[in-house]
Image 1 (tube, rainbow, N blue to C red):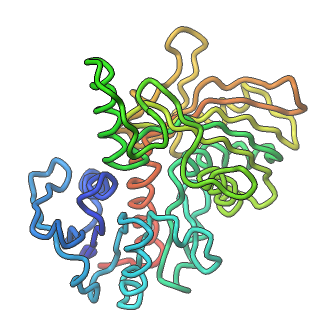
Image 2 (image 1 turned 90 degrees about the vertical axis):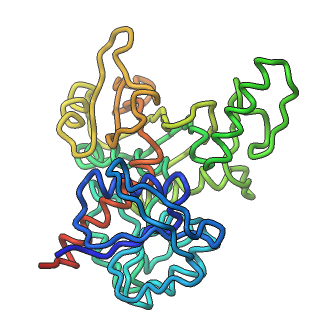
Image 3 (image 1 turned 180 degrees about the vertical axis):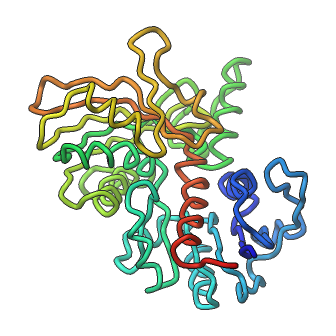
Length: 341
């Protein structure tokens, strides 16, 4: 006996990925519903590569009663309206927006890092999925933190345009084409030209000069991993279609060598260590696209601080940064709380 699962925001990048991953991982489902805004009602969507098509239902009129799990990938505004309705109807919401992440009554979960936190979902019947850049970083940090206790983390991100949705991907493609043929480039989704450029600005600016994306990485890492870890982030949009990269510098309480870190990461869940000190002996976003792993490369000691390490972290932001993590949360929820059959 399987679950009844609704994917809300099914026509977007992350929603489509959620449907694909549910099929790939053979999530035990008796029924799946693709739910989206009214303008997508009736649109047919394939569930991964299964050949099975589902027609989109209108979120405004969708009745969540009798549905077990709803994976929300529809943005904060729609989530604010419909997630509480789904939760009140007895459907557990796993939300990919930022709306509930810092709510003390909503667990923020990365299954490889803090699985026990999911037990708190009953307070609101809602579980939050972290920011894409946070998710891959805490997967990398968790086994190292357990081994030597991280005091301070300084991260610079190289985030792909798919993090800004289909509009971001379209803008990179259109601007690249325009530059090649000599047409004028007009930024629309981003604040400056993204093609052949990098933009040190993701989300809105805050009073202290950081952006909200940077703030998310700080507070979410503390909530998921350890409130005592000090985090400094600089988040940058780069002209890559899929896959976020991060240069991470860590300072530990205890001594840890690069070799020890490599051995730990090699055995850690959700991580693939690809770290050969030779040409091409590392992973780039192109190789990570379509994969669920968090890739770690370039592990080395930092001699400028006591017990310091630097590493390179790459992952498909639409997968581990969003859709895959949500499905993994659903799997964890099923094992611990919603067993059927």
